[in-house]
Each structure stands twice: as structure tokens, then as C-alpha cells.
Image 1 (cartoon, rainbow, N blue to C red):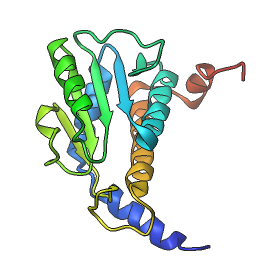
Image 2: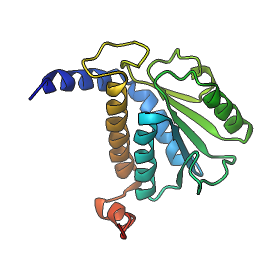
Image 3: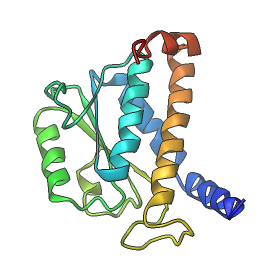
Image 4: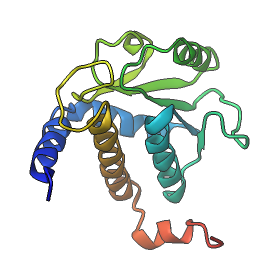
Length: 179
């Protein structure tokens, strides 16, 4: 089918590029946070919204920045930003404000050397192409970054299920029942 083997290879390379110790730090931060706030724009925003939902299914307090029902960020919270290029002034301001409010900040991005990495408590790099360049891909723009992010989030959820002793049925019980 088309070039699926090439895409699978690119996904494996991108997943293998993620330092496991940084993922563990992120998971530790999620587990110790009072509430987890997720933020991303465009397709990355869609990926991280799915992660926020899964955190809720795990029984953790989670929210999406910009959602009309979002709680205020407070001391002990965690802000997770998903941004391939991580150079937005809006994200810089969010990160600074989160720290000012006593929250930790995690950044999932394409390199530990992106402009905003210095403002994060935890940086999880994914070697993948962005719309501006980076690791070449047969998929357009930042697709490998987004797909890898989604897979990473699902793998984190599996780790957290084990760590928190949450079953599939526990998660189903927290799933929306009016659809």
C-alpha cells in the first residue's frame, strides 16, 4: 500500500530518537502534578487534546489551554506544550506565566536546542521534520512529528496505566456515555 513501509520506518526512527529518561521525567511530572494542562496549535493541538482526554480517562485532572472550561493554572500544576519548532512568543509567555504561578513546564519538540527549551523543566525531543525543515520525511511538513507525538502519548498512557494500577475498564468507566 503506497509507501507504508517507508512511513513505518520513519515512525520507528522518530520513536527511537526519544530519550527514555526524558519520557520518565515527563511521566513523573504528570503523576505528581495537581493538574495537567495541555497546549498545542494546529495539528499538534489536536494530538495533545487527545492526550488530555486520555489523562482524564486515567482519573487524572487534566485540561486544555484555551478551552472555555479550563481551570486556572496554580502551584503544583504541569503545563505540557507540544510544538515542533517551539519558537512562538505566545508559548514563551505561557511558559513564563506558568512558572510565575508555581507550575512546572514540559516541552515536547523536535530538538533540545529549540529556542524555548531553556524555559522548560522537562524537554522531550522527537527527531522529526517540521514545516521549516529538519529530518527529511516522505510525509508533508510535520506529519511524522505529529504521528510520533500521538504514538508517544499512547505509550505514556500505557506506562501510566501500569504505574497507577488503572485497568481498561477503569478508563472505559470515565469515557463519555452520551455521544
